[in-house]
Amino acid sequence: MSQHQATVAVFVSPTSWIESGAVAQCHQVAALDGMLHVAGMPDLHPGKGAPIGAAMTSTVLYPFLVGSDIGCGIAVFPVRLKRADPEKLAARFPDLDHAPEDDDPARDVVKGDVPAGHLDGLGTVGRGNHFVELARVGSVLDQGHASRLGLAAGDLVLVVHSGSRGLGERILREHTEVHGAGPAADPADYLARHDEAVRWGSLNRRLLAARVAHALGFEPAEPIVDQCHNLVEVRDGVYLHRKGAAPGDGRDVLIAGTRGTPSYLVAAHAGPDAGHSVAHGAGRKMSRADALRRGKAKHTVEELRRTPLGSVVVCGDRQLLFEEAPTAYKRIEQVIADLVAHELATPVATTIPLVTYKTPEPPKEHRRRRGRS
Image (cartoon, rainbow, N blue to C red):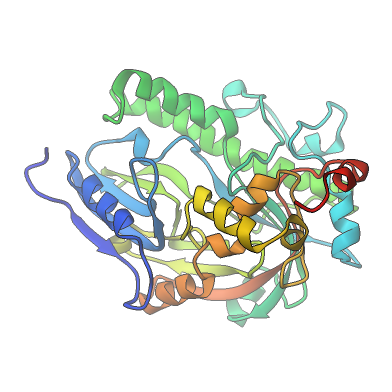
């Protein structure tokens, strides 16, 4: 154990709801050897062994504080489409559960070697809270920042949330099989492999965006935002671990709402007390099991395929549809308000979902046979 307890700061307002278990996890992490500071974001919630929505500074590198989805992040791409009919566009989304064919033109974004030579899962979105979303810019909240990013109200964007798939999982597993939740025996070796997973995640987001661009009929573009929220960096001679926390030191960050609420693009300006970080999303308020149980009591599958915003959800996995229901998450407006109250970020614009892709839908004949349950 360390000689002194690290400091813990949670950046929420008195009216925000944070599970006591998540705060307890922050203090458990603070008691680890070498820990200096733990910063909890407004989307803080309990994770497996470590809180999600936290930035954790230490003189010791702990791979489990980053987790298995190293390099997971959110990128935003400009979209040039004349019409955006959600139903018609939803039907044209490609199958992002399966890797693109060798002759897929989207593969043109893969230039040079693939990081770590890891081809398995390249060009696929994954499960859990990952998604690819066609959205339109709603309210512009800061004209200067929006103009700098080339955005105006009504513009279309593609939001891609995905990580390093099996690569990050393999890196963590090979560590935990020998060291459990202990520190990295060779920090330089871990960091080298970690950095490959971060690069892989960024490449994968570009490939996913290019696949959707070709399917919907617009030209792939470079992202205007691409921030990873599961990573560790060496900063001021110590290790800054982020688990569900986006770099907030002068970066533009898309903070994801839910598929039934807006997301917020912010200009982040967080300092050392906040671990130079901001929230990465709305944050879960229900476990997946609770969301599944409560959702089935309240909603049909068809109801969840259409959101109150009029957007369409493409998700053939019915269990995932309930687990990821908007009601399973905290209010994104409160998360943003907390960041603003603590002077960690300036809201730039909202993005309103049109089509949110999770997993491919089964053929229509199959859906009719299954009915609405």
